[in-house]
Length: 300
Image (tube, rainbow, N blue to C red; front, side, top):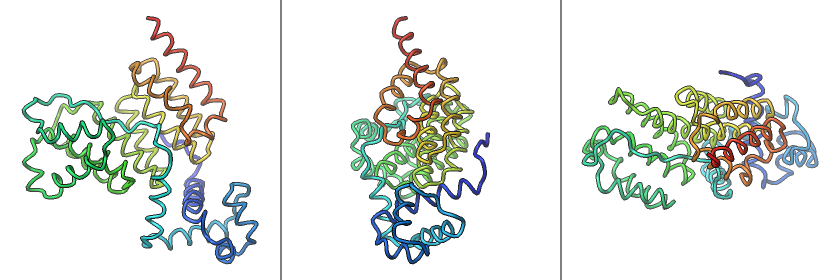
């Protein structure tokens, strides 16, 4: 379902976000010259106190595009993202379903333990080695390969390598559809959601929402997916999007497992990405509904 107002508005939001991420520490004089505005006006743009007109927006986009191949700026962007507080939203790593114990290599059991313990660097080192060459990867039992790729995507995501993570999540999804007729819905919904997160982190907001929407169609009760979509809408300060996904979260909550409800309730109060959403009535109502539902579940 496409619910955003227009592609132009989407592009504007993406441009503003990338401009602020890349240039918030840049020399104001340089920015003022490129945008053809005063230094004070540049500061207003960076602090969300003023919105740029079409010509300034175009100049901002040109500045952002000029940095695409500049490794220093790309590195700065990843550093800004990675330096944020530990994420409260969920990038789930799911249980293996429908696979016999003999098809799960011991080294992969170790990887899953490392990820559970948030040791993403060590997990990455093992998975990078195991997936680097196709001949080695093919030794992994076929049904287990998508799970291995899903784990690799998570390790990449938490190392702030979002583009690689998105590619690996997509590969995991495509592979499991090729080799299994009985792929668990939770696998498909989880890693489609994770793909949405990786796209969101690259400011590919339209593609991210499409993936969140796809995950919702696969497993409507998977409310962590709705939570992540609300985070994306909040980052882009769009109350219409927040309201849309908050409504879907409230609608799916009665069918969600208690653990997912608790995860969302534990996360939302301190998640920095929800600063804007907390000012939206629709989000507040959805969270109150979720809290009431959780209390009912505890009683009985």
